[in-house]
Image 1 (cartoon, rainbow, N blue to C red):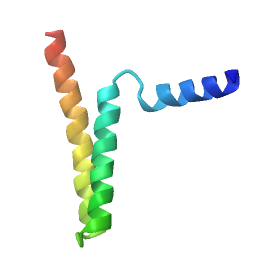
Image 2 (cartoon, rainbow, N blue to C red):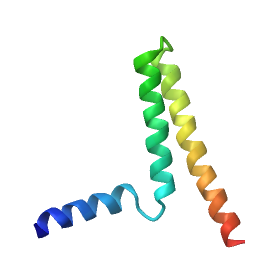
Image 3 (cartoon, helix red, strand yellow):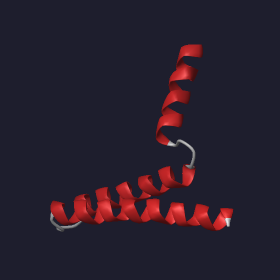
Image 4 (cartoon, rainbow, N blue to C red):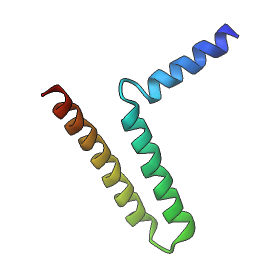
Length: 71
């Protein structure tokens, strides 16, 4: 059991890290990209570009929010 708990804790720290909001935002953006690929006829390259842009926006938004909180 200790091994499983340590394994889960490693992955939590690896994926979530210091800010759970970035991890949650990335999950939402990736899920949106998956829905676009599965349910629309939008070319995969466009979905990849939009998804990448969404991840960048999530990261910048999180950094800006942290900057406002510290100011």
